[in-house]
Amino acid sequence: MSLTVHEWAHAWTADRLGDPTARLLGRVSFNPIVHIDPIGTILLPLVAMFSGFPILGWAKPVPVNTSQLRSPKRDFMIVAAAGPLSNLIQAAIAAAIFHAVGGFAEAGQMGVARILLMAVSINLLLAVFNMIPVPPLDGGNVLAGLLPDSMGGLLQGMRQYGFIILYALMLSGILWQIVDPPYKFLLRLML
Image (cartoon, rainbow, N blue to C red):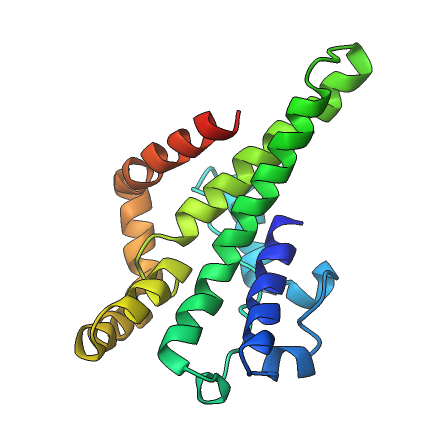
């Protein structure tokens, strides 16, 4: 659900800012099937589960034709930020429901509380992880939109090495050092 809403947010935002590409492809949808990437959503998470490697997966990226956006640089940055923002909103909703039902610690409600806590945690991790400023992550696209064109172009030139950089950060333990502080800060705010 978190990935579906994340990708829907990218698609919906791009459509609202002038690019109908994702809408014409049926991607402005809460149907998870249209967002499944066979490798990133199914194969890699399965391999990671059974091998002990760190889990890194993704949904099918939403296509954005920046030339159709009204203000390409600014609007692409907004489209990129929409996904992580959707995860923050999902986390806030789950946290609000958790607090609303938190006083009812009966046996049947413990499962609901656990699911809500997982929803908060997963969505916060997705939001923070996706805002790491390494292309192809959303944070890389947001940073490229904030930088002068020459520096943004240099950052986008790293896109082909992005997953190598992410795996290096993950395997070295540096990734968790980047993600953990903002994740814990947001978790404390919401819970």
